[in-house]
Length: 529
Image (cartoon, rainbow, N blue to C red; front, side, top):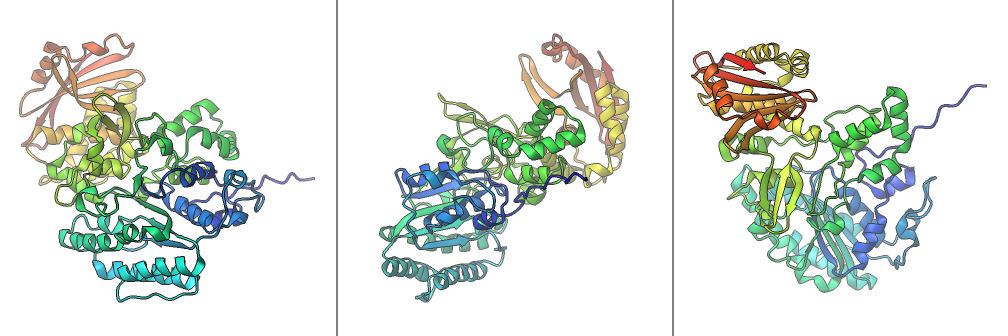
């Protein structure tokens, strides 16, 4: 008698449609109790900003099913248990729902593309409710459709707009097209304010709130949930949700890899968790990256990052608008989150809104949020993108496991020799005659390879150029350009840069490095313990 292997569960990797997930029996982490709190509380018009691939589209699809009154999707279905909202006091009355998804198109050709997409979305809604569009342009058609549906069905309309800002984020590098789209969207979204009497619910999602470009100036009825602690986990998965809903996947990975449960969960947390969306300490996983991890049998890959390469952000940072060495541990205020303006782009809030930085601390007295990379996936991947810009090639073409082994084992000479080979392969016309350039490249290499590297570390008597910590060692680097390695090492000693770590139980290496610009490389180095 053969033993039948367990049936592999269906994971909704990349699936955004709630009815499809429920009808086909995919794993679904139940957020409907939170949805119930939202739709039965005060207010009826809401906005939520979250990074891409964070479950916003699935949330919109779920809300659409709720307001369509499709209770059958929330009960026991396809072998999956009933969802929380099914047992709560919701009316389950069918409302007309206008669902608009702006995510599917590229908007670099301007309003022609936008008008075509909006026309198609409105036409689909009209056909679904057996009516026709009226009006010469999409804004008038939107207004008339809302009024017609309300009058015909006798129920107010729910409007759900997913990725409302996609036309704007697509065109941040093309100012004229961006402004043209901005004007068109302002007029279109203005309908939601002027036709409020016909609406029972409004929900907009996007990456950021363009508050400084007047799109939201006419939508002051929107309640912004972006930094609301009550809804910090509305999108994304908490640690408890992961362990409660993905037990079979976790058990299967542990069985196949022979890892300890605590060790694996800690590695999972460090690699994919860490996103925080309020002053409260609750953190969440990115759902897409986590599902891909489980789907691939436990492979720790750059799943989310590969779907969202931030080329325009890399260009902003490389254009000297932000110090790469000080990109983490940065403080901003709540008003900074709204600085999403093509005329005055602020890279740090932009990095936070797009998911490359997240909140790690909040000071209630000053109102300041401290930002850092959310996890190892984002930290290492983003450093890799920047390093490609600074060196002209992928890190995998230049460094190998020898460098990692050398740092982990405390072999500083082997590590520095590997770095010299790396610099030797960088095209001469990319290298800049500034100490900061060389310092930045070294910082990005360590970060890309997953080491805990901090630069410009402030202590009582100055700033340490770079500090790298492993489980066993602390490396304290001082860099010079066209000087001497001995001068760099003497500065470490005279200012006692390494002193705070002498009692850490780790072996401390003091490393003086001189960069020789004529050779475009590390000229010499010297170290002491």
